Image 1 (tube, one colour):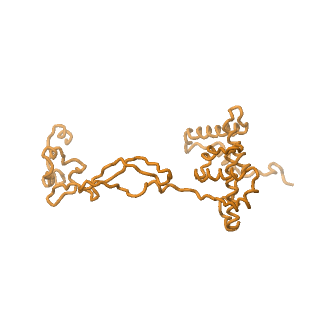
Image 2 (cartoon, rainbow, N blue to C red):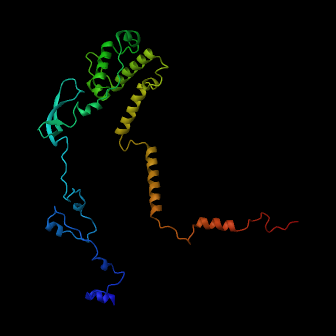
Image 3 (spheres, rainbow, N blue to C red):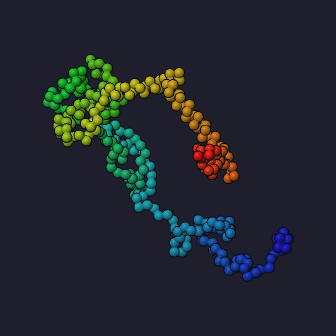
Length: 295
């Protein structure tokens, strides 16, 4: 009967548990003074979300307070010049800087001081030698290197902060043979190791990386040669063992996909192997003298 009344729009008799009885006692929201009547009329009291405009900070008179201006001033962006302390040539560049403009019109940067990214200018610790150290220790270490060529290498290492691809690209010593990156690294790290041991003693610098793990020239050359061969080889040059391993891996992945797609076995259906194992477990053990009469 209630369904028919709902279709016809007949109001039901109010009951004690009817929530519509308490609607008259609910307090209706009042329109704030700062809100227009048209905007307030758009609000619905049955809306599940409380309007954010009613939850803003209000002053003592119920009027929404205006955002307070920053004591540092109004934010503005200025196109200013700057210098990077990491460069020694005095290069001057331009960039946008966040600034604040106060009431008097004075503009000052938000971050005053040196270039903020200058803190990332980290230089590696270089090992340099004196004339006495070179004559007594380094001159006889490698006869293929002269003093002038060694000085040229050390200058590039200091200039480019031991960035070996850049050093190898810029290394062009007049009158000297062409050098590979491995030769340049071997010369520098061997000199650094000899100097550190001679100055501090081998026991005191035994934990340093350059002393504990000397640069292995032959290993680096062979490692890069193997990588170059692996990169340059074609499909026909691949190792048969690698192809066999790839085929086995593909077969394993195919079996895993079949198992994943197979429907799960029902509770009543058992594996044939499990059935055979259960049957053998239930049957009594066979005697080796079955059918023979004991004498």
